[in-house]
Image 1 (cartoon, rainbow, N blue to C red):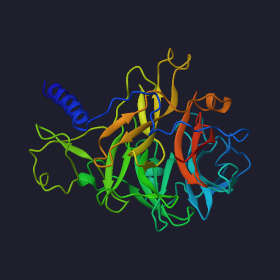
Image 2: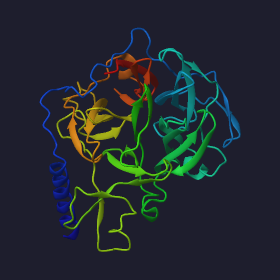
Image 3: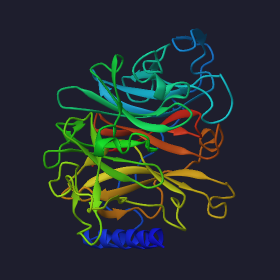
Image 4: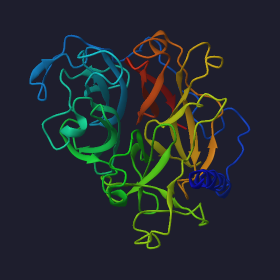
Length: 395
């Protein structure tokens, strides 16, 4: 009975949160704030495919491994020294089935955002280091990368030891030499999230003189994270992150706070709950799960967050059991937990052969976004097998 009442309270709080945020009704399929004009360039895709000829000496197996022989997908993207750099997830040929191989991150660079040269060895992988218990044997998966104004690259990625997925942080100055900092939520709320399932983080960025850099809002860094529901988190240093929770038990659900809020210290009577920015929508393209995509961008209209929506209704998916498609959110920058609008249909869907068939069925999984030479370039995984690009003019 108590759990039932808690669930009812949770739903009421979620409804109150939407009301308090002043959500606006969307009247068109693609409103002015959305970036609906991404196009796949002719004759370019896929830009990265599996390669059986490259080998890497794995420090964990102590053996030479064809590290990108099976699949190459789900890329991060950024700009370094005037070039677009894509960090892509590569799976070896050690086993079959999703989650059964080892994932490492490969490095590819481009002068034009379309044609890439790849390094022959990975730049990020499970090693005999402080994170080996969390990353081996499953590996390092699904990165997102953003950069500060002074050139510090911050990467969020999924640690997968084949038992538990954890969102983790690493930093670099050159995208090849990395310092691993461990799980992003390790210190939040006295470690309460350390063993909770977490993945997929999108840091809020902004364009300054044409360069896409990490933004601060009211003195804090913000990111969106989660799989199924999408949540928010904040940080003071880009290393340690705190999921945004809300007061329960009759408190104002529109008030968010960090673990440092004086009203929550040493007060066991105050309940705290995670409330999502969005949840899956029954009857829509994202009815099964929602997952953040590439870096969010602070625009004149608000924070635009590209996300991945998974559907699981074959009648709405042309007979396919599941499908990942791209959606977009507009979030209030004055309160980055408040949703303003949400696209009612996907702006990119699987249509090409390499998007329709691969390790999984139809998938466009969006993870990388860069501002480069006056255009946006979006990099995404196709059917968990290859990497592709789509481009749009900057507004």
